[in-house]
Structure formats: C-alpha cells, structure tokens
Image 1 (cartoon, rainbow, N blue to C red):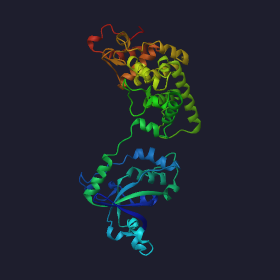
Image 2 (image 1 turned 180 degrees about the vertical axis):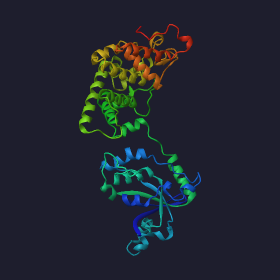
Image 3 (image 1 turned 180 degrees about the horizontal axis):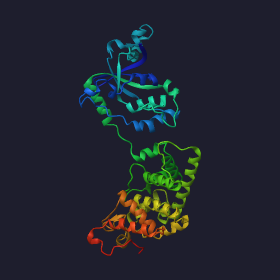
Image 4 (image 1 turned 90 degrees about the vertical axis):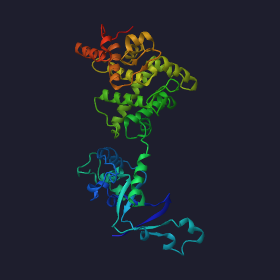
Length: 426
C-alpha cells in the first residue's frame, strides 16, 4: 500500500537527502535492523558496519523512558532507503500545485514536496537503531523475545506520535561512510555531564540538590573527577554522587537503581538522609568547614592551599572519609554524628613526612610528602576507608583486624614488611 508524506529535499556535499516526519508505529514497521536483513549472514565484515544492539540498555533504560515520560523527546533518525526510486518518489510542491505558489516563493519552496513510498523500500538505520528498538518495546511493552517488560504498559500514545527522519537514498559505500562518521564523531557524555542532566537517577538528582544548597555550584567541578592544586573548587560532582549512592545503599541496605526514580515516599526518605549526613559532615569536619567558610572567589586561594597540604582537600580523600563516617555511624559501631566527626578530625590528614610515614604510605599516598601523589585505585580506596574507620574507633573483632592487617601488608614489599603492624595515630 503506497504512503505519501510531506518532506523537504536538501543537499550536503554530494548527498541528496530528505527530512520528513512519520508516526512512530509506522517507522518501526518500515525500518529493518541490518542484522534482520535476509542477506546479513552472507555480508562481508565491511558490510556489517552496524554495531550490535545492546538489548539490555534498550529494555531497562530507553524503553521505560519512552513509555513512562510524557516529556519524551529525541533527535532525528538517519535511515537509508534501499529500492528507493528517487526520480519518481519525490514530487516538489511547485509541481503539485504549480499555479498555487506565487512566483516569488518558488525558489524557497522548490525543496518542499511529497514523498511516496510503495512498500517496496527497505529502510535501514544509519543512526538510531537503539531508539528504534526502544519505540518498539515501549509500544508493545515486550522485548525482543516477546517477554513482558516490568514497570511499563503498552504505550499507544507513542505509537501515534511523530518522529523526525532523515532519509538518504541507498548507495552501499556512501551509507557505510555516513554510519562510520556519525558514530565516530559522536562524543560520549562525561560522568559529570550525566549527573548534571539525569532526572531518572535519584543519586544524580540529590547530588545537584546538595551542591546547590550546601556547597555552591561553582565549587563542585563537573567536567572531571579530579582536581589539580590550582583549581578553585572544593570537590567534584562525581565525588558527591559516589558518596550519595553509598549513603543510600548503606543506610537502607539495598542496591540503588540509578536508571529509574523510586516512588515519592522513597525519594523523600533518601533526600532527608542524604541532606542530614552532608549537613553533619560539612559542619562537623574541620577541613570541610574551613574550605567552605568563604564560597566566593576570595576563598579560592584557601581551598588551593588546603588541597596542597591536606588529604581532605582532594576528592579521593573526601570520598574515603565519607565512607568511613558511614561505617562509624552504622551497625555495629553506631557512633553518633558528632563523635564520629570529632574522631575523624583527630586523624593526621596533613601531608607531612611524619603523617605519610606513620599512617598513609601505601594507603592513600605513595612517595614523599613533597614529591609523592595520592593513590586513586579502587583497591586502595577500600583499604583507606577501612584504615580510617579503624583509626577513628570502628568496632572490629579479631578476625576483622587480622584481615585488615593482611590487606594492609599487601601494599608493601618483602623488605618493608619487617615489624609492620596496622598504623596508629602519631
């Protein structure tokens, strides 16, 4: 059955293409994923230029967004049309109603017209196949194996809504090049950018709230997870985010779903706990309070000095302290917030030769005080959290102390092990 849709013809380089809109259900019906083409198995490696679909991401992230969010929106699909007879398929508006378009408008509307599809065309996506599958999943509430998708119902409204399509007549080599270029130069967003924009991740939402209310947007770096000594910020967005996930997971003993917002009651619960802990830390940890005592540019120099001279001026040190605080205030130690802060304040956070040698060498620091560096590996972060909590008074049984000692000793060479015990406060 032939279908006619309004379209605009354009040209970029030596490629003619068409911009049109289609109903979402019709697009799903017409477009064929390359892997579903009959000739897929016989294609060469070069011809299999489309990457495989990550069905898990489609099922758990994109489809629920399209099915459940009335503000859903995304960019244009780029498809190539096989068996598309360009010469007879496009009728310019000036030919359809030659006498109805005033002469002065004809140059501007010469690219406007109508495309007619005969059902013999095969549409193949050059960009957007994950979104395409997500539309299919959202409309039917079933995945590629026809299994029901939890937490969504068939979205009939989406099926009737309009999606934008950029259609390129098929030429084998040109289609391959377009796909390669579109995907090669697409930049993946950073963790910080995702935290700034993600409204489905409760940890990201709460991170923005904590920064805006308690820290100041200018003092939380979002473009990277690290800070050098010359930067004016207090911390990074990813540091606050990681801590928020840990606060929620440890407090409520759960694995936090960062792909979909919890219900309103849980959101209020998580928000209250996260804010309560950050207020306690930013007020009760002396270095934090000092770094934030002047949030304007006049306080930047102080923050830079703290970062040069104190482990708590560095994002890794901050994250380790917050996680240690959660261990101290959680089961079985059950220390009060004020006492936990006081005990953490008593630890030797200053970057000095004595502190490094007695406490932090191999834990949070490698090398000398003047020429060393903070250790960022996840293994060391876990060890640092345990050492910090231990030094601040976490209740550990003998087996736990023995295991902590073994983890600690693994950071040293055989020649350094003689007489080594768990660090003690200077």
